[in-house]
Image 1 (spheres, rainbow over the protein chains, first blue to last red):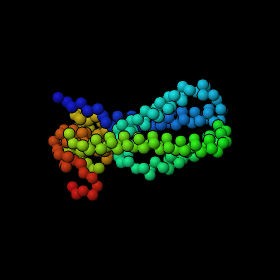
Image 2: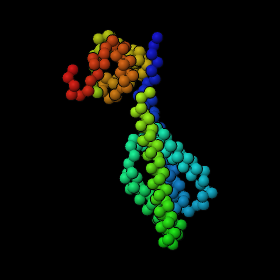
Image 3: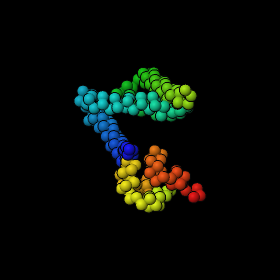
Length: 140
Length: 67
C-alpha cells in the first residue's frame, strides 16, 4: 500500500506565508488602533470591536506561549526588569501627556502599581512556562 | 545537508515523478531535495530511503562528514 505523506514542503511554505500575513495584519491593526486613539482621538466606542479582537488575539498568543512552554524554560527575575521599566515609562507618558494626570503623588502611586502588576504578571507567565518545561523533562 | 538521492534514483531507473509518487510528495519537492535546496524532515528522509532501498547513511550526510 502506498504511504500517504502530505507534501511537507508545501505545508511549511503555506504556514510561513500565513504567519507573515498574520504578522502584517496584527501590526496593521495595532497601528490602526494607535492612530485612532492618539491621533484622531476617537472615542473607544468607535473602535471597541477592533480593540477587542486585537487584545483577544494578543491574550491567546500569550496564553499559548505560556502553556506550550515556549516563553522561557527557566525563571529569570532580572530579564523582566528592562521591559517592566520600558512599559512603566510608556505608562507615565500616556498618563502625563495624554490623560493629563499631572499630580506627582497620583503618578508615582499609579506608576508603582503598574510596575508591580506588570512584573507580577510576567513573573507568573515565566513560572508557568518553566513548570511546563520541567514537566516535559519528567519520565512517565 | 548533502544527499545522493539522484544517483540512487537513477540506479533504480526511477524518475523524479515516480519517486515523488512513492513517497507522497510533489516532483518539485524531490527536485529541490536533490539540488540541496530543501532539507526534508526525518519522516520524509526515511520514506525516500525505503523507496530507494538505502539507509539514511547511504543517502544523507552533512558538510564535513566523509562519504
